[in-house]
Image (cartoon, rainbow, N blue to C red):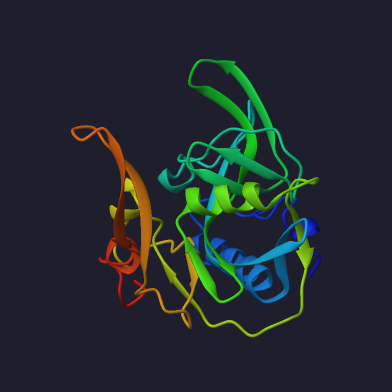
Length: 223
């Protein structure tokens, strides 16, 4: 699969209510990214550990609009397929995007992408979208990150709902879209450190966080 071509218009010809076809297309892209692609930041290459899909489409005229709740959580952007888009929640690999803003809260076009939630730095899991964005930028010296082919490997993937997205939590049982994919073969029971400013003591302190308890506490079986 040429991943850039696949990211051009991944849901062409599909309706937002056709959840089986949407799920199938996301799964194909996810498998290709996990098995055959990485993110090159100068002399360091990261592989994928966890991703989420986001997409929005609304035309100014016609009936080819996606009105379902799942696609209303997407940051607008004008980007080409395969570009990286840094935003308040982390960083996306973009679909082909065309954003038109006519009035406040009235957005037209097709845009979205794949949020990078966790990466592999060798054997180390970098868990959390902002951690990933920071790690990518800090690894860059002369060039911005880019999507590159890497040695093919087998990956066992699991699916679950996107983290912190209210419409995902309200999906009707049996009609859910599981738009988060993660490596099932990795150990997610690891503790990561954070540096936090202590307002009372007016200094920095280290805190720890168990990613598995936070991220998968409601979905330890993947669903």
